[in-house]
Image 1 (tube, rainbow, N blue to C red):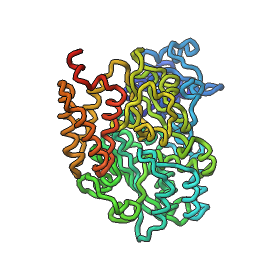
Image 2 (image 1 turned 60 degrees about the vertical axis):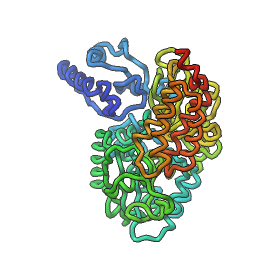
Image 3 (image 1 turned 135 degrees about the vertical axis):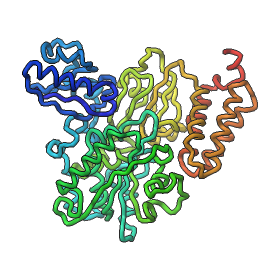
Image 4 (image 1 turned 45 degrees about the horizontal axis):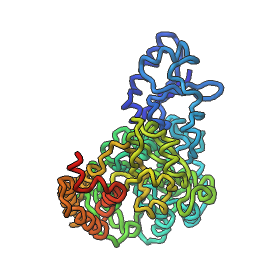
Length: 508
């Protein structure tokens, strides 16, 4: 038997290690030889631990498994109560357009043989056959934009670094992923680490950078372990080092661990932390592309941006650009969480509507109660009511509604959600996580909590103050932490005004 049990952090949190041990023990007891592979997750978190068994028709899925379910896996698999059929025929999985996450869950994450057999290194080989400027223009043609939240065109950033004159340039991968409800970076690093390594190596070839760093938050111990092992394996195999795949061109990588400050997800704070300084925001200009890590030209890209690059180089920028709508091109890995029936990662082309994601793909709320609001873009994202469910998922459409795609994390709330409490949480989160560099964020968030408490107490003069304060934070903050905190607050007030009136306290 060939069996896959995910070693992904989410699967392990659901008991995957215990299930794997039970499979090993049951096989030994029966004298059955089992090849047990600890793969990444397929992203269907509600089915974790998801065990897959190889059959002539393809892999069959069983989940969510417990150690007690293992006996039937050996004795009566055809009638197993947790049988889900062929993994890739499960409706949630079958509807996806998997490009960045094509290998995740299919391979042993640390097997270079598996990686290459599933199309890995094709992008790097294509890049090695082309001059740097052509690589950059291929990324420009793809329309790839920063998947970390800012949505800045990746190729334009690379072009700037390529044109900068310096003895040393750097590629820095932002793997801080501090947004609540976001887990795509972690899932990719744990399930397909060589994809990120390949993307960073291509970025180095394209811009003239010879050193790369992956900055991972300390709360991701599994991702840190897997990435370190993958970098060592890639170096031994000659994919990284002084002579990348025999090309005579150098690119080295290191894994660095951050202490967990949310603001270090902002690129200049991350660079300060990477240099051993306090993680505070830098004023711009100068841009990191010209004066970044150690004052040298630096590409700072998110995990998902860099992980999309190998597919683009292997299949062409035009093929990637053919997917999506408006200026939102390619695929976006949606991370569906909160009060939801089918939570997990769903990779699809831009343009799918918010309602289709929430009601059809995610299956509505886990509680069975009507949906009240969906927060898109992490703790700084706006709340979208059911009346906005026809909104196409793309940067332009969300911006037009006072929202943001961000890292594409989605938190679903049912009708029991307290929107005033959620608005207060946004301000409190900003107050706690602020680096303290600028007054609108550092002081504004504290005043925001106090003023929302006045609203909750029935003070009719407090609500106009909140709106004025949000305007000041949006226009005056140095980075997106203070600048975007008003998004959840103002959207909650705009769509659910009845929860912010003096009548609220009397009604309760």
